[in-house]
Length: 358
Image (cartoon, rainbow, N blue to C red; front, side, top):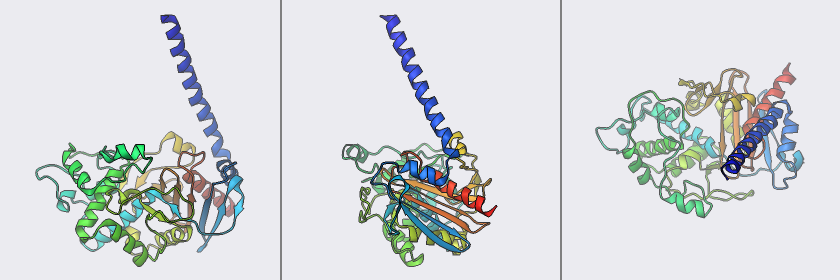
């Protein structure tokens, strides 16, 4: 009996190892694919796939919409969840607050929000650069119901819960390495609410639509043509980490403003910290994470400043090259782990643009 169990364990181990090797082998094929080949594979036999790809080159913006098997669809606007690209807007509002003298990057969060006295807390800069030491998220009771109801994990997590959680975290005043944190950006949302005395949803919608003239970029109201949008409450604490929906024209306009160094947006891509967080998998796909600014990741090798986003049913990418004035936006209604994600598609567009220039 014992011999049989050992044989089963060995076989299972070999199967797991075989699957891992097969996955690595399959991934090894991706770098050699062209953008069109990668797009065709990603949308293969998926009638629901709608991927919009926009570029800015030589001062001109254009976009294409693709569907099943990479087929070109009518040039219509679609509403996408942009997930963590929301963080770049949160960071932009922090940059504005810094310009206005309301926030100091080197100040700790207890200067702005009501947390227990006598404890150590991270700085605004550390939250912006994901070097605060905070985890990606912390378990809260609404997550149980969200799991069973197949809702967004962060639905119903209140600002009071986040404030209470901050007070319970054992934080030491040391230098932490880069560790991506949705919780950190929920805390930044609370800071913005405190310094502007308005709720985050109102702040964000006014910022995008009135200040940046991005009329279709706002906190999700679940209204859109592609469906399967996440549930949110306007009082949720994690809105500032990933609750925005947008379309390709707005995202291209946003990219152009970043290239034009529009007011406080110019501060966001400036490097604040070396993170050297490029994983083997990312490097295989041609993506680097060398430095970070206010939320924006910096690929020093390719000169690309970028961020991506993902929800259960959407994934996105915005990258731009300050030196050449180029930008690429990929908006997809497919999950982040579905075949080839938006960041890889975006980098392939950049690579093929470089080949044309050569």
